[in-house]
Amino acid sequence: MRLFITSYQKSGTHQIMPMFVVRPDVVDRGHSNWVDVPERYGLNKEINWEGVQETAQNLRLFPGKAFGHIAYMPEYAQVFEETNTKVLFNVRDPRDVIVAEYENAMIKMSKGDKSPLWNFYDKESGKRIFEKEDPITDLIILAAARWPRWLGWLDHDFVLKVKYEDLRLNTRETVKDIVEWLDYSEYSDVDHFVKKAKPRPKNPTFRKGNVGDWKITFKFHHMELAEELLSATMERLGYVW
Image (tube, rainbow, N blue to C red; front, side, top):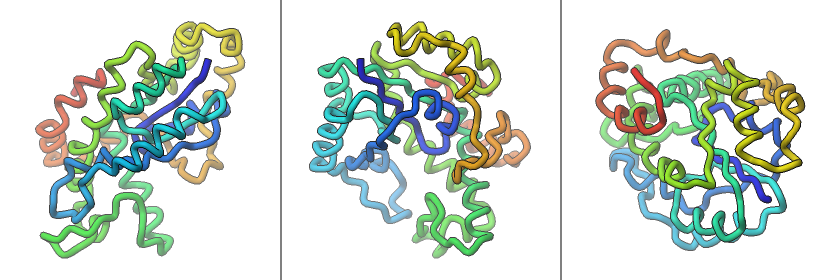
């Protein structure tokens, strides 16, 4: 059996990846998760079909276990079905993902790095996202445009949704569910995986990984905007307001 782990960026893969020692990373060359992003960010919103084919081939050929921030495409799902691959879809409360994006960017900017994740130029404001007074609003807008492109993974029985929060707060029970679902001798030692399901502070992308950071960071207008734009995604992922 093959195993693939996919996740939306900043969804806390520093927990689930060490459990399975997955490598190599597979890069999504199709860029499908950007097609619904507002025009003002000046991004290429066309699916790269040659990139889709390249990504599908890489997903077909990886040996045993691999990881990637791979948004849903029917072409990718077909590869997993044909190769008897099980997929763990690691998800996290989109509001906490937004906070993780923001905090990570602020740390990088404070160190002189002007190109943190998603620091796009906004043609309407004449500024990059993290040069604005309120970048969180932009991150909510981007999240609302991008998350739906990942949700197709939830429609397949070869995919198991794994909530970051469950793995962090109810580790043993969640690991037991994963192991039972995988139903393979290589993945039968619950204690082994529980021990590995811990954040690694030396990971360069690890910050705090707290659950519910959005309640502290979001201002009222952020909560209103997130509820307006992300409600359907939140419900589909199994999160409540």
